[in-house]
Length: 255
Length: 255
Image (cartoon, rainbow over all chains, first blue to last red; front, side, top):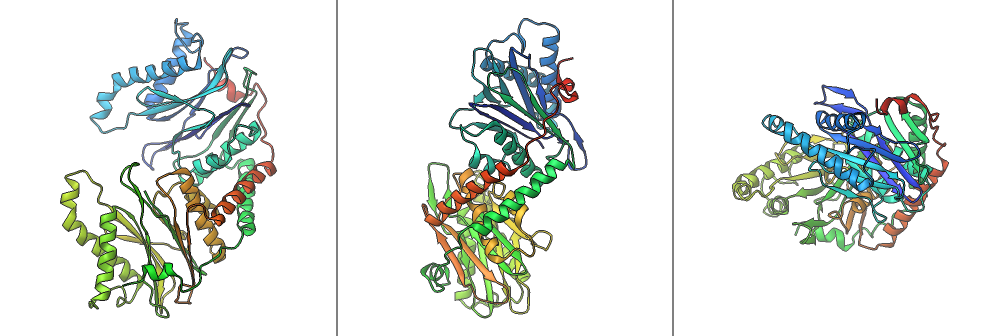
């Protein structure tokens, strides 16, 4: 499985991804899922991937090839983030057209999804989710994060913390905690974790990070988090239990 | 959807459930999903349900009927919790035999699951999960909680906090927070929340609680939790970002 997330607010963008890939629990390996296609000073383009590895790798390879071949349309020539999202969607569709019949007949899931985050001169920072079908949505002020892969374990922490005025550094810690929670609850999501933080209007990636298995920061963060959770329980007001013979009990007793 | 959980450790058992049922987002209603079949002084039996409502209601109704009819085998006459888990599994299978063909041909999901928690004189407190197929597993010292329904959003908080020496009161708060996290992330899980806390060897339910929509305790708990999460971020050591031109970046740049 995979877990990738992106967060955008007025201060910038944070993107994070695990690196575990598995074809059954008996075949686990590590592949990068977060890619940086930025052109410093001009455009920042970050892409993370989930789903069928041959499909997502195929799309990433194609994106690179078209840049290297200086093709007329590529990640460097498109003028808006929205165009880039559509372009990635089209590449996904092309690859599906080629491979889908072969995978489908073996009941192999051929779907792959992408998160696209970044900023092009003249635009605000933007974050997109590109679906396996090639269509896409954009994060907005009301919903400032997007996820792909194993999304549920890491969502509550995001639901509770991300605001438009959350500083970038806090967003980065929040992303890391969201990934760590997912790793703890789903063994098919695993290190190394890649994390990138981008500051609005800087047009260059100044903050990136790779945390490997057993990284002391991860261990420290996990310990600190668990201590805080325990403190939160301790400081929570006691539950006001109902009187012993209250209606609720009567209600559900046998007739 | 539904979210029910049970936690057991040496101090006792906590069980909690939401009450929202839906047949599509345009048909939402509230049904109790946590039932108390205890015989004070002799046995404590708590059952929570998820899945197809007609099936789970059918099983609960049958369990009640067999008690009321003083049938030879019923929840009051079985001598171990394990027998009770098997008995509930059998009732589920019987009902499935009757209704499944009719539901299956309309592509209606007929599955339902149960959590069973309690204690019978002569045994330790026990917690079981009964699968839709009627087989079941028991919570152990290594895995002290079980969940049914929408299990993922509420799992990280349990994974991080539940230990064999966690006091019952803290387990109850943890269960409530797990349900609240799920409600916040999945709109098809909703109040009222029913919560029961049982102390080992008391053979009577002394603590029960129903929290309705807008309950001040829930609001207070949510606020306090979010404050603690923010404090946790603030107190987390700063991320040690890599030098700007580090290998990681090179790695993923275009060839």
